[in-house]
Image (cartoon, rainbow, N blue to C red; front, side, top):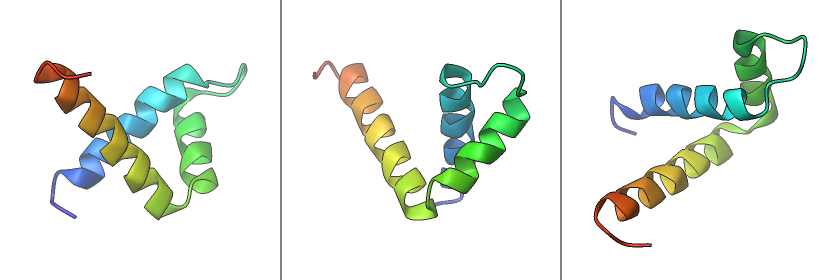
Length: 62
């Protein structure tokens, strides 16, 4: 894992927390809940998938 990946993972989890924010639960708690719910390997795999799709779109792919 590169030095940037933990930061990217945190940013991706924050973005995901925005989408699934539970009413009455703050963003910070939602991020913590997501971290607890997702195994580390799965979190990293989801981040890589998301980044890959972003890069493909940036390069003009689908």
